[in-house]
Image: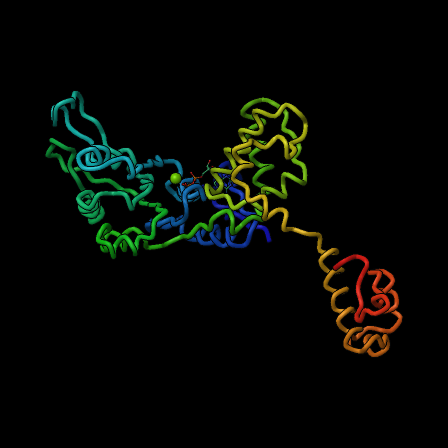
Length: 341
Ligand SMILES: Nc1ncnc2c1ncn2[C@@H]1O[C@H](COP(=O)(O)OP(=O)(O)O)[C@@H](O)[C@H]1O
Ligand SMILES: [Mg+2]
């Protein structure tokens, strides 16, 4: 199933086409996004780190009527107290030591556009109060100023934490939570959409081909298989970084197992790869065992054994030959296979 982006006059081709979907869960995400992007509702993006929340926030902005105006991200994880207030509201000249000039805050910079609050769960409680107040009427003053400034912004926030749990632990305000998550959108981890991996690898190789002006190598099946096996705790970010490293370090025209960085190979659960057996082999062994059991049960009567196994005597004869099953030697009871199932 292919997802068709809505053809609006503000349709922004570039970033939306860079976003690989390739599986039903992501197509559903895009369907929700394309419905809500045009309205000024607040959206909360949920998902592990590296699943594409920031990229999706930009896409929402690009699909909205605000696309021509600024998209302003704030990382709540690195700011607290006065630093956050300053970032959000800006300051007047002389508001505090070091405030040499007037500085506009993110709220002003994002006017008529979108403000993206990344890692919103990390916002200290006091700053959550500040922010909640702004959400009431979008009016504020710069630090050290008295002019009331009014802005028109759309809020998208993102978190990799369970905010309900943060509320329970009294680390996040419930009222702010309901304000931010009018529409919650969940991005599944990469390990739950592995189907997209080959397409993503190809896409990133094409991107790096342009960035580094170097011909991209082909990816061997063994490497694709390993990528499909791996759990990707760092999600799409980890995959993209790995592809970049391999791309830069690899001089050949093909990426093979031996081109994978040693620290990545160390992370691989190699035994789980060894557990994988060809289906034909598994089937052969299971069939062989079932035939031996049936023959032992019927005391070696092939017709009866075939009937129990719901196959024709002819098929049984064929399989006995194929699996080299024969009665045990003199003095032995039972049957065995020379293939040692
Ligand atoms: N579906 C996708 N298709 C292409 N690139 C993606 C996709 N999802 C994430 N990326 C890329 O992976 C990296 C991490 O994504 P990001 O949006 O920063 O994740 P998050 O904000 O959830 O931590 C970025 O470089 C982004 O461009
Ligand atoms: Mg992020």
